[in-house]
Image (cartoon, rainbow, N blue to C red):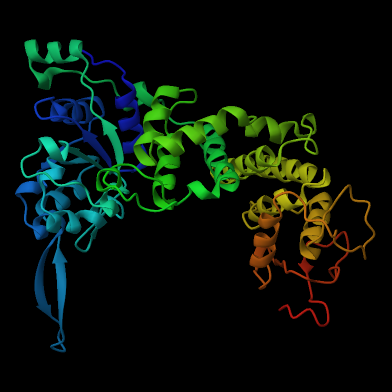
Length: 448
């Protein structure tokens, strides 16, 4: 018997692969443990450990402490993790399932905060092989139920629990432990690096365009504060889970966004993403001149450039891929979008594969970054001055330039260092040099 591929199961699978704790919301008696635990144990080969924090002391959910004495008789406290944490950390893969979360007293949930997000139990750091899933009844239908505190709610992917009738009937007739849930690979595939790169770039571009939605603050309504709402942490969780869904899984995407940042920001991002229509980062690397960079919307150009950066930095270092990426970013810079390309160029230069030299074309872009002026079409004289009109995404340019104001050493190749700095005279280097050293203008106040 096999369960259906529901959007909820796909979102849950993606959260487990991404390492983001999920919370299944549902009324009492709907079968939340029947779906989550057997599926993870049978479908993915994951052993499970079940815990009900409502019946726990604060120390049993997070740690138990014991006092020890050092040889110098200086006492200190060592936190011994509970048995479930030790067992989970030793298993090849494990699921820790916290049931009845809204019936746990606040003192217990306080102890669980580091467990959920930082994955630290006492003095034990849980490995990436441990997944965390929780279940809860709405406070109004729970025994002595509590609204979740905002810090806890903001750490979780909130999913409304669904159990398809056909799957429930299969379990009812043959036993719920006999339900064969789809595997992780069946649900969300094996992962796609291009999709991951494009997804993170789209989220970054959205934040660039709508900074008011990054962290508008904790909702005043305690009920809303106990569910999904936007913050830097929850947006990062959203991006991590979205990266693990299959490309084109619209239903799963909606559940993940609404379950991490809430309905309003989710709808805003979905509309932005549909309008953005990002190209494949590999196609950009292979054919950068196909795109009208100078006529492209700044937010789309920003997202595309950062998709290229994320894809290259997220894969195994490869000389051909790296050279293609820096060539593509040079094309973007030469089209007048130096302010957008320079951050990605700097990131790739500091992560260059061994045995690769810096192409002359890239060195020209690098010098323009050092002088902190628009590159244009490479026609400005060497002693040209910066434009009085800030380019699109000038804030990004200023932020990158500011980060370069203090010398930052990065390896270009064996025996060659470079320093990028703001407000500098043209670099003392030739076109054939692989070392770039910028010195501050007299009176500029900058540091070399």
